[in-house]
Image (cartoon, rainbow, N blue to C red; front, top):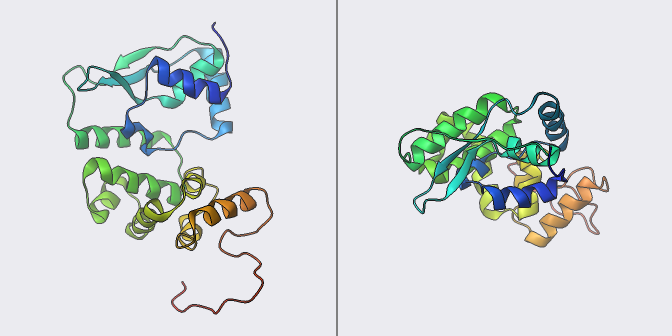
Length: 214
């Protein structure tokens, strides 16, 4: 065994030991409960599947699949095992993105909002249009459009709340025209249970209803 760590420490240690390729960050990390279950499993049975990396153009080894396994090993104090994703040379960016997508997609249970956000993230790597990204990922086109807007205009806290499955894209989209600090404040209030919806905040004076609501 090695040194056991908290998740925050493990994330820092992982970046020092073998950092993550940006394409791997398309998917959210596991929830705390899922991570704890994985850590317990690795504690009991060891690491079943090595953490996969590729070698970048600068000859740097980068994790492309297995960030959660890497973190769980660090948290459990278990030796990490790394293996190359491919035996041959570095794949093209879009080919790599598709491969990472299929590896993760089969084993992760994502809500429609989380899936669409991952699809919108994926567009950067696939240089794909929204319909193409929706098709490759299985997300709905409408949600992928929403996710693209939320990523462009949302505050980091708002985007993270959708990634974590706390807030839906439908709700998030309603507040992206607000100031980013206000978006973040609402996410905090919502997580603390002080407001029932990030889109509805008790206001001093009633606002006029807008047309075109779903």
